[in-house]
Image 1: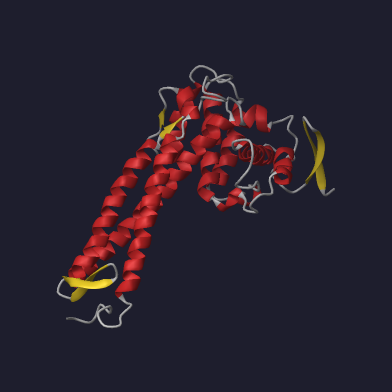
Image 2: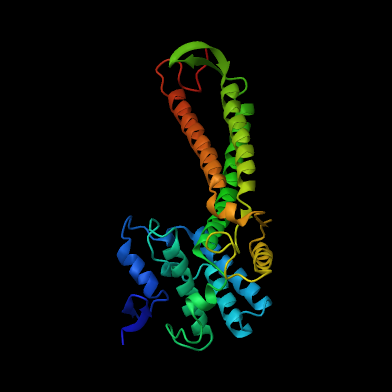
Length: 311
């Protein structure tokens, strides 16, 4: 056999026997061949999705909704994914219809099929552990996906902040090293008045310090999540206590100081934190581009461009 048969509301489809995704993921790859780039290109997102599924399983077990054996298998599968395994099984396109439903189902199916293997069953034997009924228990794409995107964003921003700090320190050292090197300052690309090369490099260091502060402020808003809101924020099909239990487990798994939004309906429809983050990232990108062009002009010559020349 080279395939297994899976069923959804549209009917039966054959899925390759060796893959961990299932029929919903298969249909998504057929329906949304938009960019040719799979979500596996963003490992932070895959790890974040696995963290959300792990937290949900622990919360559902804690509330008596999920059998311990199933919860343990789901948790083990999620930890493998967070350790970098099975990322190649996340195959849906990064651009898709349905507000991330295909991404959520891709995650549900991969986790379910790996959990089935760990329980001693075959992929696709969903009568023992189901992608929707068990892995997605108490959840909706509308709270899973934004929560995972926020966690992935925090991970990525932390890396960016570290890289910016390295660059800032480098400019700071050069500002000291070049403090006695005179050069011609320019306005409108024309020679203007003298300055030191150290002064020029110090501006880049200050710029990065300011932008790191703005980025750190913006990422604080990303720590507010709506997990437990389910479809529209009313928490339909999520039992009492689920949101707080899932948040607590997710905070422990990720090491992030996550908080549940005070109003889950508002949090489910609002994208203000993402808009603000986008604006700050654009600010950083524009200023880094401007700095790169400044350095390019600095070495352009012919008379006063080279930094090693003095006046």
